[in-house]
Amino acid sequence: MSLDVAPAAEPGMPRRWVADLLSDTLTQPTQAMRSAMAQAPVGDDVFGEDPTVAALESRVAALLGHEAALFTPTGSMANQLGMRLHVAAGEEVIADSLAHVLRAELGAAAVLSGISSRSWAADRGRLEPSAPLGLMSTGAGPYQVGTALIVVENTHNFGGGTIQPLEAIREVRSASREAGVALHLDGARLWNAHVATGIPLADYGREFDTVSVCLSKGLGAPVGSVLVGSAEDMARARIWRKRFGGGMRQVGILAAAGLHALDHHVERLADDHARAARFAAAVGEVAPAVVSPDRVETNIVMLDLSGTSWAPAELVEAAGARGIRTYAAGPTGVRLVWHLDVDDAGTDAAAEVFVDLLS
Image (cartoon, rainbow, N blue to C red; front, top):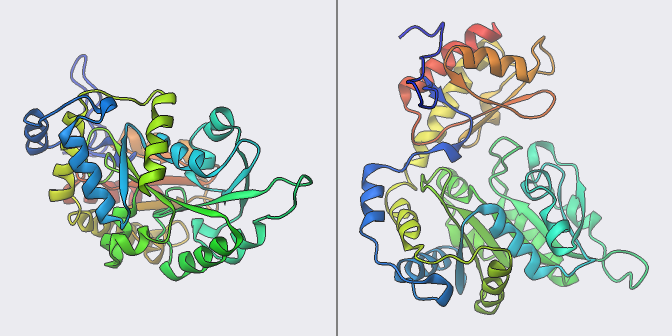
C-alpha cells in the first residue's frame, strides 16, 4: 500500500487509517470480548445487584491491595470521586503541572466539589519527592488554603508514558501520612507500569489511599474505570457517584469486558511497549533531537519539535494525509500512542512516514 495518500473512507464510515496512534482509548473490543459481554449475567448496579460488576470490583481491589472497589463509567469520574473523598470544599489538591486531573478533566474538581489546586513543574511528569513535599501546606489554620491531597499519575500521559519510581512514591507516602495528607493515584495506565517493570500492582496500590485504573485504554474495554480504596471510602464514593450522575443499571455487560481484558490483555501490553520503542529507534536515527529511544518507557512516544521547523498541528496534518493519525500535544509536542489495534505493519508504516517527514 502506498503511504503517499491515506486510504479513503467508505461512504458514511469513519476514515480508515494505516495506523491510528491518536490514543489507546481508540481500541476496539475483540470478538472474544464482545462474546463475553453478550453472555454476562447482569442486575441493577444502583441497588448493588449486578454480579458481574461485583466480580470485577472484587478482583481489581484484590489486585491493587485494597479492601473494596467501585466501577465507574470513566477515568475522569473515578479521579473526581477519589479527590472528593479526601478534599473538602475550599481545601486543595496538589499535582504536577502536566497531570491529567489538572489539564484534562475540565476543572471538574473546582466546579463539582469546590476544590482548589496548585501544581509543581515536573520534567516529563516524573515524580521528584521534594516537589510535592515542598509545595504541601498544612497547619496554617484560617490564613492559607490547606493541602488535603497529593495526586500522582502513573504512567504519566502528557509526560510521555513515564513510569513513576516506586521509591519516590514511598518517600512521598511516608511524609504525607505524617502530615495527615492523603495520596491518590491516577493509575489510568498503571497496567503499563506493572508490565514494564514487573512490580506487582499491589506494591503500587498499597502506597495510596485511593487508586483509579482504566479498562478502556490499553486493556481494550469499550468503557469503564475502577476506583479502589477502603470499604468505608468506597461506600461514600458510591453515593457521590450517584450524585455525579454515574449510577448505572445492568452494567455487567460492560464490566464483563473489563474482566475479559484482565484475563487476556494485560501481559500483551509488552507488545505495545516494544512497538513504541521500535518506532522511536527508527525515527531517532534521523532525528535524535526529536525523539530518544531512551525516553520511551511504555506505549507513548512524545516528539519534541522545538528544534525543528514543524509546528505540531502541521506535522499531525502531514502525517494524517499519509494515513498516520497522531495528536498535537502542546506548543512543541506530538504524541503517538500504541495499543492492541496497531500491529507491526502499522508501526513500520508510521516509522516510514515520520522518518521521511523529519529527515
